[in-house]
Image 1: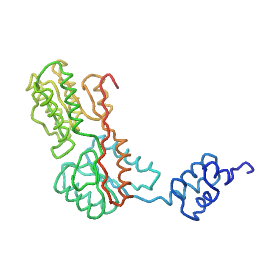
Image 2: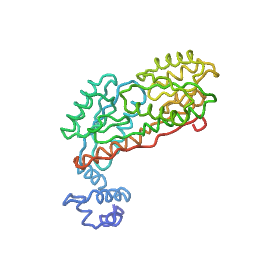
Image 3: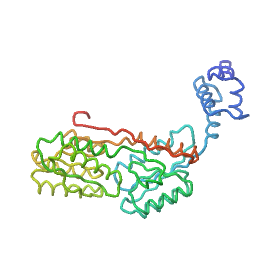
Length: 343
């Protein structure tokens, strides 16, 4: 007991007065959050006996933000990983108490997406959504705005003009990067295939525009085939790619701009090496990593979902702290590029 740190030692360690430490301990008067946090950190560091009490007081005094997230129910591991990252990002915040709420909807059912958005708006203070563009979704986002619930577009832009901000990668640059790789890695000129999940995904549309723009501007000798919508279905992608390989002897490249890469990789495993087009796909997973190792894929473009999750939580909290007085700027994060020689 004689060696137990004193309040004077705590004040010295935190660089504040004894009176300030007393206010933090007993909630006698307001102390700036940064100062209170510094006192708590010092208490933990020196082993002050009331460090737990200080920590509880800090939590009790933090504002509570109820944050909602609407993701797509596709069955893909990507959304499972995204859910885990968002949950972790909310639980790790230290400047507010975050309450996490999740809804999922089918990407092919815009009415269901709108319905789930309305549900989240009833119980949350801010909402981030991954959704296809549709009048029903835009109308639901407008209802959120009328209720004072800011909506953030996550990964793919949606409800432009109503939503608070977009957070994700620059999808136009993603498409151009995929095109650059195909144009510079194939050894012959020929036809190139492109798969998107849906034309109602702004993100996929932007990738398609960037992809086609690059070939139009930098490599016009290649012929880009009509875009195929695969609804992010692996089996459809596999069958469609095999059909293209059978139909076109000069198919030299393929970009799967959304989900469904599993089907493209499976298709290439059944094709002789000399007939395989170079493949670019999205998201680094055990399967796509193995495809790079086997040289079935030439490049994987990865979405930094952990960084995006932390950023969207920060932006949602910033919007709530400002009480919607100013619009938050869009946030573009750099995407990862993985090659056979870099994994």
